[in-house]
Image (cartoon, rainbow, N blue to C red; front, side):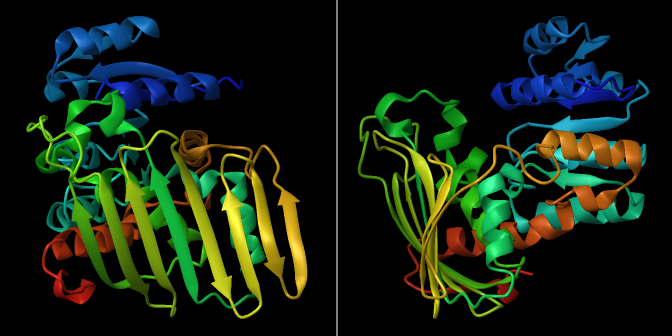
Length: 335
């Protein structure tokens, strides 16, 4: 652990807030302020790291010298914290999705661009060594098709914050779960923009739990502007979870096995099987990269800036809006 003089504030003291708190401490920086709508929750986190401030009020939170602010609130709570941080010129790390919808995201982006500050989004798969290596392998290759699968066990044991399965708060499984892999596809294929998307979705589990309206089974198809067609399968009620990613082209078929940390398949006529290193080329995770970017001013360390994350959000919104319509939604119609 390196020692750092950075003073960081965290808005949202839930599960992700605690995860980011640990990452900040591991980097060597200091958490000095915590804000949450529940004062006792803010106090609990603040006590763990001797933070100076624990509050439920943004005015109190921002009445401190802060070098960075991490926002881990549910998606509907983005605009006001972003606006306040930008007014003070404070760098931001915002959990995914960058906003609940494109409209709010565009307003946030206006504040960020006006402040000219660093604003990252929490897409940690861009920092995973396996996807960094896959991106490198595909640099000079042609990819036509991408297949991803995301599986979690929410509807089996309900070991998650309840709002994860409530559309009004989370945006549903595409925004809460699939978004990680959809963004990762954009990353490994060179950050193309989305063109259109369609999704079929159904809730046919936990019929007695009427407080949850998020579907458990989703099949999604989409197009990116580099000619790649993608499919995404999402299930949030299966015993064994995980992420799978496969790319197919004229001379390749590669699978990135997140759990085994291996890339397998074939490439240019040869069988391919390669383990990936434990660390990426930066030696930093998403929080470390963000903190180091603040210290050095090197924005290239940020692989998931807010402006680019808006393209992933647009893909998500197109898919969400297509549910039940039987048609593809054009991203250009949403902008």
